[in-house]
Image 1: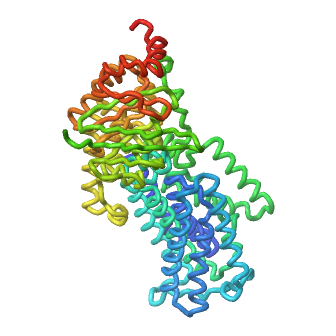
Image 2: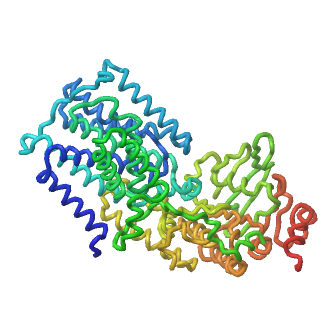
Image 3: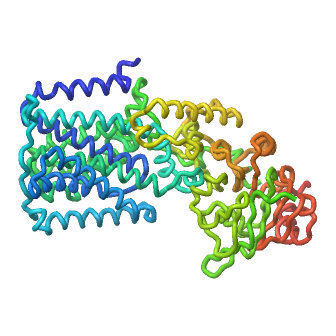
Length: 337
Length: 263
């Protein structure tokens, strides 16, 4: 087993993550918790965009729906967090499945635009349906308690998030290695070939949307508890761009890449928080840089450079030469003979 | 006479007023290798798209093993035993060759999402069996050495052969091959004859072959159907078709002279 093999690196990351509450102050713990939540978002989005190839922009909206449902069920109906949180995930999943229905007919930019419209509609609802959502000002959620466990709210929520990250990481990793992952990639790489092999396009697109909705819903519930506050601007277009950047930087079509990308982007944003205006510039530069020079993302880079790093199946081939250049001149001349 | 395995009955398709297929009939017996030839624009690929469910016909019926498949989803038709390959390479480029073949077994595996997520014992067994079957399929086409190559790192000709194997692995009854010899070098073309016959004889698969390499069609096909401008202008044994005046007029004559001056 190589020292920098995937398993060792993941194990080391887990140990560091598990020890973090004992090593850092509340502010850094908050950042670490934010990273965990973004890891969940990125994994779900990567299944949809990186694996299944659906260029959808509704993830931030589903994140918001998870957060609003969790928050509003507590505030409006007095539900306990432990009931409101799973309900938020269920509702976000249902919304994910519902918006997959037009996705069968729409591809590429058309899908992007229609899911963008859905996201704007969701944002509008958060802002203007004041009787339910409290409008632009948002609302506070009751602090959650981990009693009878001997944890403070911060540490309890951190470990709850870590638990979800570990479990949902393993489940996603298993899923993409299975016939489901192969069906997703088949839909991404060639819809026509996928269906000629018996892969039902609607079913697998819906599944991918549902999975991303579920992950976003869980993340939303945790985020509302982390902030104790829910407001529309947390779930707007910039949020969506943030998540897209994470999967591009981490590596499209890589679950581990989702972890690395989420970590990298959150750290960069925090590091630049002090310098006003630089955040956006640096952020844009990083995105352009990755798209141009590292299309496989961090995961693709690691796979290429670290011998022990076996990125399992289905990585997008960032630097794929067109097939025609692979035909030898001799073969080319015979193509039409 | 036994009932045909695949039967196309009076099928018509028009695109914007142009009749691409005009009342086509086609009966293919089990175990047959059928050639489908004709000039460009004759409607050959449209015909395959009709049979595989991608373009439902505006008129007529398609029966697979006696069951009408018109109006069904392409994925359902595939499950009923109809495989096909495409004119351009449709290999899944982000997967390895072995994974491509495993995808061909998709509809014959049954693990649910939860079983896959939790990697249950039963799911592991099914994955192992899938992998083993994919290895055997690679052996059948003599490309075992390519198992772990990414799909994007193969030559065009190799991609085509892998695609055929990927279709065959799902045990289809009928496979539609759309210009499979494009991109093959001449010496590979000779092996290709053999491969098509082995597919029929060893796998018991009925083949419908669209091809412009006339020599391949004449060598390997039991019967040949000729389309021109959306109509069937001839059908019969390769010899009959070769000497048919209408076929020579519409397609072969020019082609043979232009492409095989020596023959």
